[in-house]
Image (cartoon, rainbow over all chains, first blue to last red; front, side, top):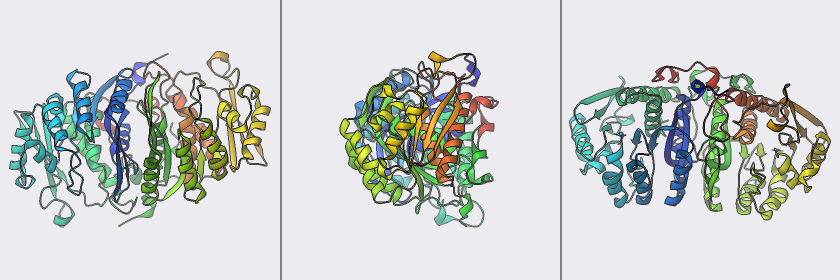
Length: 297
Length: 297
């Protein structure tokens, strides 16, 4: 007997693979799973990376991305979609065509464009495809400051406080997404360099074309931040799949990522920026060896 | 302050990507996560598939697989490894070289060779590379009956009971793995076709060159079996990473997969063979919408 209420909501992530499994489809799969949502996964690129460095990036042909999207949509009841690293103009256009056809419900576009070193990951043509082809079909886009500058067409250095973040959000909103969330994590003075005794507040700006909300969250002092952005957009998509509206999804997703940062702040996985703790392992007593008590019920 | 006891064990899966996320690295990541082990992931091939069909398979070049393995091993304390779909002789050889160099501890080789349709997924050259190059370095290999026949060099139809499974295990053991687990799930009479009122017992044969053990588990009557084999070998690797010895790891992993089959037997994800329920979602009360109570602690 098939019982509808035991079937979880389904979300789709279209993103790169991270061999270190801290970011990309791996972070998305963990985030969505931790939130009780069944994640399907379309791989756009295969990166050889760990917590310290990206060794290589292998971009998949656009038709391979197209095939995977077709396989998922033909069979599973996808209720929301997030995009992460798309990598090339051709892949952005494959996704945009599906979005334009109405096949990608509750589409969250995390416009992965700039590495944490500030290095541009995409061609100018791909950025234009985001602006002109993909964002018009997004329910929400979640740029960080650098990505917001590229999408808004302004110099990154000009976005340096909540007012200029709001300006960027307004410019990006004109490209067509229903909602824009500009994330303030890279504001001057935020993060380890500006860390003082009292926890800092990090502002994000959420805009729907009418109402502008500033969402403040505490800064978590930790080296383990790899995959934070991926996990935020994945959590938003998961919560949308579960039926939340955008403001609530953003707020609960921020709380989820905050807890994952807090939970993982003392573990040590890799020599660089370690992953966050999606499942709250660090907060739980660890079973003995072997962890037979960890076997799911 | 870095605290060692909050850091989970790390395992590595080297396998294909399943867009429907029921099998492959996705099943491995979910399995290892559900068992409290941090999974790293090397992608060998990108499949466009769902619960009903495989639309396409895109094999990655061997050097891309090599790069990913290098990225993970250079940074993260991998305590066990499992291999799933490797796909080509070149990729089998890349993995075998690392194994021969002693870089892949507690190596579990799930010799993915035959699709559930009975269709051969690998070239003869790749099968010979498994036999001659990779298996000598495996701690354990976990063939199903068809794969056991290919590795043992006998006709599949000749393996039809526990005695012939034991013969195949002895032949495979001579290739070099420390342990062999021949899985009986495809024995004649097991499964839906032979399902009768009383639950059937499915025998697996475990052999270490000296002791032969028959492990019996109940058959679960469910259409949702996609990823069962992947999840079993992933669970074994996770339990080895957590410190278990092979017999205990195999036994607890079988219990884990059994529960995941039981938990997922009534959900409906896709039109074909749906995934198993790695996280025990179906057994838990579902939160309202949105599932803010599902946010990890």
